[in-house]
Length: 44
Length: 330
Image 1 (cartoon, chains in turn brown, red):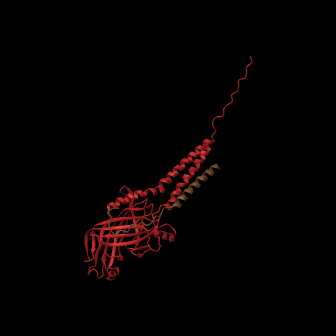
Image 2 (cartoon, chains in turn green, brown):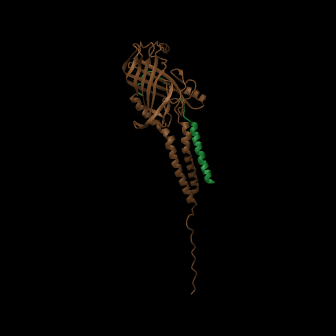
Image 3 (cartoon, one colour):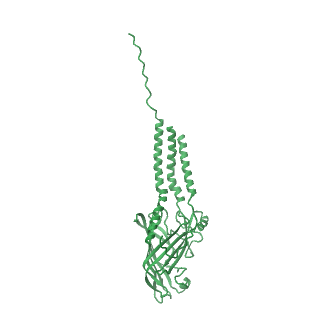
């Protein structure tokens, strides 16, 4: 019975971690102010 | 005490073992995404290219034609498109700007590409366009999906506005990276004139009225890093002709452009460095952490079982009773 409880705690913690990671997602930021180029840049 | 430690180890073993598939199959598709605010430029060159001189309507060889390609993530448009589509979407406003050896504009070709941030599948919402014309793309463009497979993909050709297979032609090594080589051939196809013509005052409507048509063919080659799906090198054998009509002074056809367009060396180096850097987070989620956590989970489980077994074993042999010697009477 104790082993089952320990396994359940481990599983719940794993689920909590992945849900938190997935919920955080990736920041979208804002659109770059740089223009669409019509001149040849000197370097990348 | 041993039993308590065994239970803690068991909980940790389940934690890490469960994390292994969850990271790969649940977290990775939700976290690995093309950033909505990406901005990137690329410079390609065609040495000794053939170019049409519109003043004489004859083809000539020029030392170099340079193509500057910009892709700019439009975050506001992506949010709006994402709300409509119900998923994370990326909107790329792109411009392919070609210029001749003296800096004169050869072509200016804008497009808006809207796609799923994880799978790279095109998303059809208002605004998707090529050179100002609304289109519905099928297949990929510019980038392959994460974890690219060794198979043919459908690739959208913006000039011809058609989708055609791009064939997987083998695995190669490109500057220390394992890459998949893809190739697509677009046969001679009649294509619309660009909205912005290289000569001022010339409009595509006027040219179209002359009956002269624009035809195009290309062989497109990409060397794609399969973990990120990013092309690290690309080139195109591109040909354009004007055919028929009254514009050519009785000639059947004239070459408008012909050249072998290749990425500029400094851009190749920077792309390879960027892709090498971007591989790590993807590999962590799809390979390093899942396999590492699985191995750790198995080790912890074994340790926990070992502790449990030792906890149940008796401490040592029971002491044997020794009978006291009875006094002997003489």
